[in-house]
Length: 325
Image (cartoon, rainbow, N blue to C red; front, side):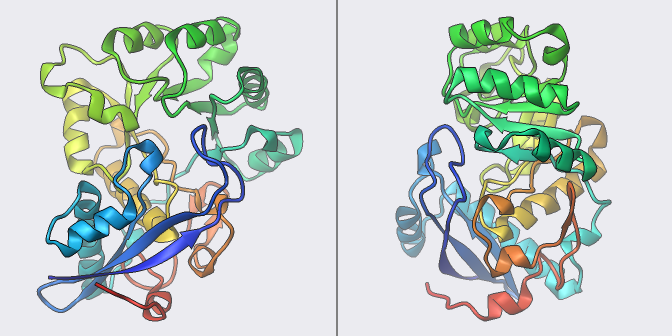
């Protein structure tokens, strides 16, 4: 098996979460040649702010014959891409289109015009990146609830039990009922998370590595966020089944290639485990300045539509890249 890569830079339109500003982000596309000579493609987009090993270090390890968990995931997805290309099938042939949540990373975007647009486009769920300004968070949650959307809140682990208990005590019962889940409220602690989960449903994402899975007696959260870019989805499903969790598949705010791979997993998992599934969150390419890959993805409101080509698509764009190893 031959592995090559092609670096890229993504330029955020605005701050992407409570931990980062709108600074350019680096990653690389991965090209794998399988044992039959077929090429497949995937994405490697580390978030050092969230604990990932930096890109240069991961690529150096790869040159030395070592593979990080992220690279292992990228290779697995590239091999699936190669197999679909061999069969002349597109990822989007594998299930019915799914509604994605609409992600708002900068709460300053929120106004009535935006929500009217989202209502017209048939979005049902809005995910808010919160944790930077509690007053603005409070205003935004109430505004989103008044517009009739289901709400997801993502703190990226930056809040605290006391702050959240205070925050949620100020929300009305009707607004609390519209909160589908609160993701990574603060660093994982079974006791503290269980206390907050008595108020609102909790979702586990980047705090996954802190959970002592083998010693758990019960789950202090209700939803597992599955990011195929860094977590093996089939292993994640086993945990969901064991602990009776719902799941939501999301992209990693990564390259459009990574977005389509995440959506591929969403289509397949929702087809096989629909009773456990919540709407995915893979519609994230608009959070960066457009590039040729983003421009190749067609959407309709909350739906990602079939793009041209086999596997994840983008055939002619891959051909135009320079690859190294």
